[in-house]
Length: 204
Ligand code: URA
Image (cartoon, rainbow, N blue to C red; front, side, top):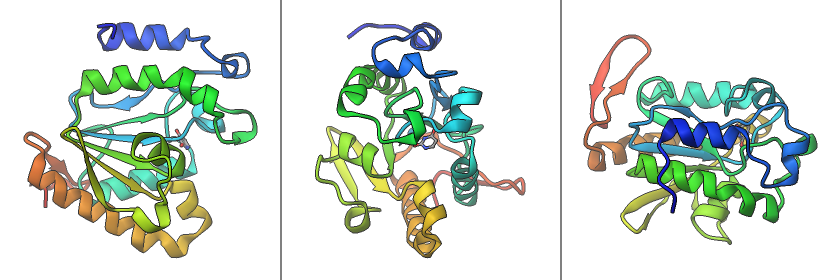
């Protein structure tokens, strides 16, 4: 394992040519949020807006994610970090290929090693299958916490899936409520901050 700090890691990642996605990207979406976060969210890979802006979850799905986060006192500004399994956009938003995930996962591993999160939330099937279990089924296992070597991992619906199937939003939001409760149990310094100015202390 290399021991780069955040600045060197970001700089090196922005120059990455480990897979074919480098040829078609506009920008690397390295990650966003607090480098002292105890909660890490992991999505699949950048879409069009993320590729143009170089930041994860800034399109319609990202807006929904930000809304759900805000409702439980979380935000990339205050207390979470957000990254993806692959940092460059797959053409036409296809699923990242196994070899692209394999080529890219080292960046996420280094982000994880610097962050040492208490909780990892996988947004959607690709992240959950990669980080929790290869046969993870989001519809059946969402909202459950799995202890992986002392880190709690949970999978939930991808925000884009919730936009496509709004009927799943209540179940998806229940996972965020369960997350807030878990943060209260295991996170030591996460302070929940609500957009109306209130602070909820740790957890709910
Ligand atoms: N979907 C993802 O999985 N990640 C993003 O950053 C944007 C959309």
